[in-house]
Structure formats: C-alpha cells, structure tokens
Length: 214
Image 1 (cartoon, rainbow, N blue to C red):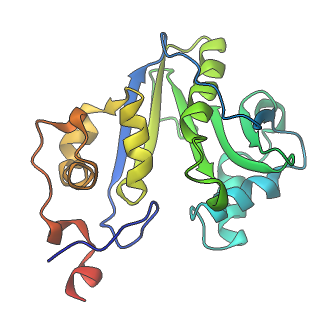
Image 2 (image 1 turned 135 degrees about the vertical axis):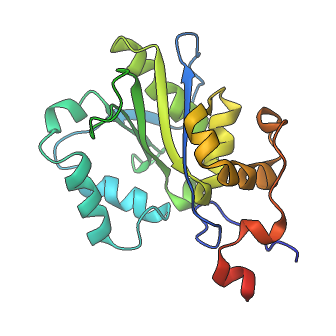
C-alpha cells in the first residue's frame, strides 16, 4: 500500500510514546523570523495556551485542553511567569508556545529539564518558528542551571520529532528499545540521518489498523 500524505499530529499514524534527550550546554539560540517576538506567561493566559494547543491539534476540544492545563500547570502561575514562553506575531497575537519545565510525575530522578507542550498555531506553521522557540526555551533551562533536557513526544507528531532530531536530541535508550517500532515509523516518515542504523517501518506498519484496512 502507498502511504497517504500525512500531516503533523496525524491520528492515522500508529501511536507510540517517544522520548528524546540531549546535552543542551552548548546549544545556541536561533533568532526568530523578522516581526516576531517573545513574551512570558502572565496570569490570564491559560485560555490562549489552550487555543494554541487546540489549533495545533494537541486537543480536539477546549475541555481537553483545560484538563491538561489543570494536570500540568494549575497552581503554578508563579513558576510559569519565568518558564512558559509565547511567540507573538507582528499583530501581538500569541502564535506559539513552549515551556521550560521538569518531570511533574516524579519518575525522573536525573533533575534534567523537560521541554513541555511545544505548539505552533495552525496558521503560523511553516514560518520557521519552532526551532527558534525551542532554542529560546533551552536558554531558559540553561539559566536555571540545567545542562540536559528531555522531550516527551509521540509518533503522531512526527514532524516535531524531526525538528528535535535536527536540533541534536536523540532517542533515550530505554525508549528506543521499548518503542522500537515507533522509531521505525519515524525513520520511514523522515529518513532522518540520526536514525541511519534503524530499518524503516513498512508502509502498512505506519498507519493504525483502522486506516490500514480502509
């Protein structure tokens, strides 16, 4: 079977949780395109964050976004004002977001920073915002004394995974072993040189069962 044209955050792709990490101590900051700027979170920005994530297809509904916000960020306004970043377009509208955070589940004893909830509003995608935004948030992590970062992601956001690989992040070994088929899907969709030693998934392995049978 031939693969259809696949979008980022495409739920036709078989879902695997992926985790990357990397040394951030020497990562430079990449400048934003002309006309864009940064702003930190301010109290009251919750719904703007949800709308960006919803536009980027992280959520289907506002209620899903609110549930995620409450799980990750509720009661942390003070921290978010120096950790959550928005990209503003020339009209001052919030176009993208990412957060320099940490493991809130208590499963990572390393003390590494965690890159949280990177999203670009749908109409702003393809304008070169993601790499500058990520590099900017990495600088915030470094300012907090962190030298390594982890990035939780998934196969359905394969274009974002390509960006992380481009920036030098690599699969965590345990995740690479446990979710090898997920990384094979990423190899098939991106052919990224960082995954050169991995055999790509066959086309029928990329799509979830319902889509593959259609």
